[in-house]
Length: 344
Ligand code: PEP
Ligand code: MN
Image 1 (cartoon, rainbow, N blue to C red):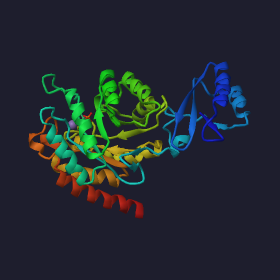
Image 2 (image 1 turned 180 degrees about the vertical axis):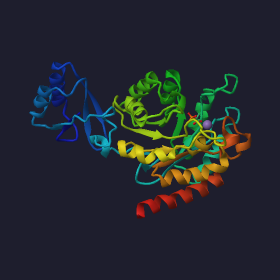
Image 3 (image 1 turned 60 degrees about the vertical axis):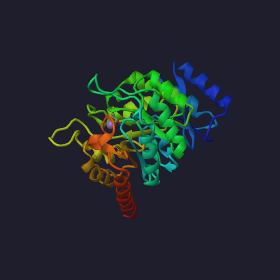
Image 4 (image 1 turned 120 degrees about the horizontal axis):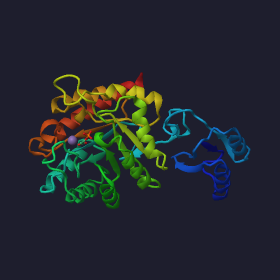
């Protein structure tokens, strides 16, 4: 990883660096952080002569050869100063609240608009809403392109940015063309490296944010962080890690809440962590406690399923969505915990 003296290399400087690394069979990927651009060497960057030649350039501060499977997301990386901003919130500075239904009902756009307005009133900075759904049962509702229009209309009516899950290249293109602000990679696709690469390529040079859920089957933390590295290494560092429960090891919860991995993630990476308490517990009555625990463990934000009338919603809403009133109370409590963590 090449660290320039100034925030960005000029075109001429970049060409010179490209020429040097290509002599060693490597190439350069530019990562545009909010504070500074860094230049990832793609290939073996440990060659001593390569390092000496680059460090000999007067506009280069140093070459960083962090030995890490996720060198860009590593807590020691120069990108640690990068700040992701979403919904007007600089992650890490105050608690980000994303909320909305599991699934947007294409037959009932008004429900989404009313939910969106109520959640904005209740303190949401951004909306979520499933357009295309990964369903276990092939006969369950799978989503509908029409819901994308409704999602974007909800965004323009409220002025809030939106999150939706994409499962393939077709969804990705439709979502970006429509102006979706945050792309969700769901638990089932968290290790779909082709999709991660496609998303990384598609959002390079944009301010789109990627929210990567922790797969139900992911074990080691490095596996999760490396999946996020797949996206970042194409040039856009706006990636958010999202614990959402793992395979259940006890009866009662839908998944096993894993919000306690947040401090471990924060030791290894600078990436913000936004916990999804709704899928973690799978039951609306437990969502508040899980949210508070997540914030106590250091989460930078929450992504919560909420609906003005959960019982008649689609997908997960009847089981796990909360009302806007419950959301408002939950966020108030969570902000108190956030403040307590910072006062200490
Ligand atoms: C969702 O957010 O509605 C969803 C399907 O998420 P996950 O991939 O975590 O199951
Ligand atoms: Mn859901």
